[in-house]
Length: 110
Length: 102
Length: 139
Image (tube, rainbow over all chains, first blue to last red; front, side, top):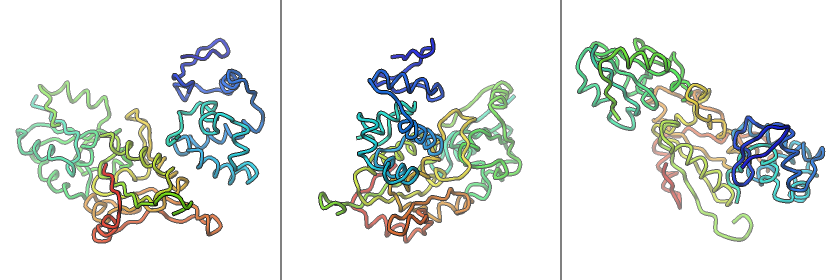
């Protein structure tokens, strides 16, 4: 599968995850969200950017439980809960947000 | 020019390095790479064996495999030459045959 | 029993292979991360060449493989707080605890204080730890 952004084609796997991590650019996240019928706001970007820096540091996409805890610590308790994260990313915060962030599917995603 | 023997297994894990040292003809070269680089480290249970074999063989070790495992060149036994991939290629072309001890 | 349902068993993952030369180290790490979701009592053991998985300063650029050593430092986030390294394995390889990455976790019950999760233990103590386990997985 492929995704067209800015006249360029980006390879994705069958679930829509970006094949090459280094291909990522913000416009790709917007395009993926649009395909899901969503629009990304500041709160979405907070989580997406968090995921990208988590991956940079630890070389993994965190499991949802780990993401929730870490977000709570970094961005405050009102954001570190699954209700808030599921409202932003109804398909699952780890799965959907990781996809927009250009990361592989989270390890330990059940 | 002689034979290049390559060993890619840790001496702690397999006996490939020991077999190589036992069966290689004096004057041969031995290149340690992948997990084999562990055999090139000083102060291990095997260091003494390598040092003793230096009279018979020229030892080489692949630098990128040392770095990958968090080991550094100053942990390499004195007298073992650290080479990069180009050095690996040069060694294979300089020798008549390559024997891999898997 | 953390949430009143299901039985908590003692799971132990024994890691005895160097990283990158074979797939064991990475496979073990992935299994550990997945299993961490099930709220079991997890211990990790590194012995023999497995200790090389935890060395600091790994740089895989030259071999074109992913440097997954950074992921071990995330184990604390996954509530894995018991990582045992066999002292004798370090010694016979000319290494010491200083050659290993620091592994920490944040203690929820102690105002998120950072605490060590890596313990260098002698052979006898390790044998005891392994003997206390319900399930042992070997890599």
